[in-house]
Every structure is written in structure tokens, then in C-alpha cells.
Amino acid sequence: MKQRGRWAAHPEMLAQHSTHQVIRAMTLESLGMSSRVIYRRCLPGGPWRRLLPGVILLHNNDPTPDQLVHAALLYAGESAIVTAEEACLRYGLRLPTPESPRQIHLLVPHRKKLNSSEFVTIERTRHLPAPWLRAGVPLAPLVRATTDLVRRTRDSETVSRVLIEAIQRGRCSPQALAEELDRGTKRGTAIPRRLLAEWSDVRSVAEAEAQKLSKSLPNPPTHQNTVLYDHAGQYAGQPDFWWDEVGLAWEIDSVEFHFRSADYARTLHRNTRYAALGIAVVQTLPSRLRTEPKAVLNELSDAYRAAEVRPRPPVSLRPAG
Image: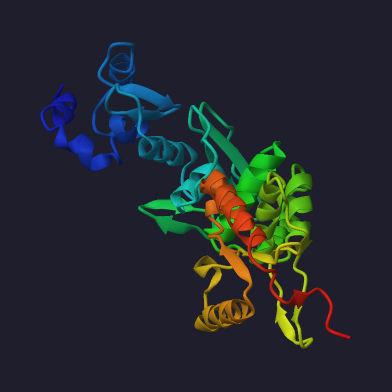
């Protein structure tokens, strides 16, 4: 009874030995609590909840995302790191609606004998990366977390959205993602490999999104990445998308891609050249292709109608002969 009084008389001890109110059953036993008492307190209507084998939540409400993550890490033990969806979310990626109930995918050393359980997916790997620590949670590097997620996703549209988000928002290059896919199992990689093969760089990813969206227009672009020449045969520009019948350009190269001041300066110079030639140009933030597709389509339709009623600028697809 003396040992029982130790934790019962000092409830702050439980807070000191838990993380986000999550604790191992063996830790509770080390504080003098019997396994029978632990079991009884986790019964329906009791003050606690069992989250995973040997892992206890010190209240009986629904666990928070942080509590689920820390419960999973306690279950898996040292060296475990969070990957896939949960890691991507913690890096700030905007993903399609997360799974419900929330699933926690963990990487553990290949030598570790541990099975998946409840909401935890255990993946044993010989290529355990060095973790990145975010708010006390060890995460797989974003490139690895992204590939772990898409390998387990069968819907090509979802895979595309995840990869685009990692490339545009997470600054992962298509090449780095493809190389990471090459390091691991080939299972589940057909869809992401095909998409990454089509995207040579960050620019091509946004253009692929824009091309898909533009097919919804009454008058889709007539050309993509075509070179324009002025009346004297001089280079006039190479817009991402071009409506040749009305002389309208659409560019997807906003400040989201301008990691260097030189890139931004080139864009300003290009827009000045367009203005001097009378070329109407619509510029769209890459993120708006996903977040505001209808608004983007309306802007393009309005710009097309405006271009129809003014003289076509003196540019051509071939230099003057």
C-alpha cells in the first residue's frame, strides 16, 4: 500500500513521466501501480484509455493527433520515426483529406521484430534515414515521407496532388523524389514513377496542372511553350500557354518559383517586352491552380474575350523570312 500511495498521493508524478498524457504501462508499474489497477482504470467508463498494447492515455476522451503520435512512438520504442501522411502534415503540406481514423506510419530498423497494431503501421527498413525533429517528434525527411505515402496510395489523382504539393510547397525536386523511389521497394511505385518521369522540374509540374485545367475552357490554348517572334524576326518570348488566334499569353511562373532575385528580374524583363508588343498576359500563382481553379478559369475566359476585341499583336510563331 505504501507504493500505491506514492502515485495516488502525488498525481503530478504521472504528468512528469508521461508525454501529452500518454504513458507506458510498464512506467506506471514502476511507479507502484499494479497491472490489475491499470486494467481496471482503462475499462469502459473508467478514467483512462488503452491506446495500444502497453500504452495508456491518462484520460478517457478521444485522443488528439499529438497523443496518437506519441502513443505510436512509445509502442515502437527507440529509433522509430514518423513517415508518410503524418510526417507530411507536420512539414506543412496540404494533403487530400487525411485518413479517418488517423493512421500513424512508423519506420523502424529492420532488425526490430514488431507488428503493426490498431492505428499504427510498422514498416521495417534497412534504409532508416536520420530523423528531423519537429516539436519533439522524429520525422523522416520530407522526400522519404512523401514517397512512403504515395507508395501506399492507389488513386493516381491523389498521388499527383501529393507529389505536386511536395514539389511546390516542400521544395522537393522531382529528381530527388524519383531517386528515393529507386532506393526502396518497387511495390506501389508505378504511378508516382510515371508522373515524375513527365515532370522534369518544378516548372513542368505546374504546367501539367495548368494544362489539365485549361481543357475545361471553351477555347483552350493553341500552343504550349512555343517561341514567339516580333515583326522584325526578333525573339519576343516563350509563354507557357499561348492562344495564337487572339495573341493571349498565360504564364505560370510567379514569385512562388523565384528562389533567386535573377529569376524575378527575368520575369519583369519578359513582362515589359510583352507590354511593348501589346501582348496580353495572364499570370497565375501555381497554388491557385489547386485552391481556386474556377476563379482561374474565369480570369482566362475574361482575358480571352478582351483579347478578341482588340487588334492582334504583331507577333508570329516563325521569324520573319
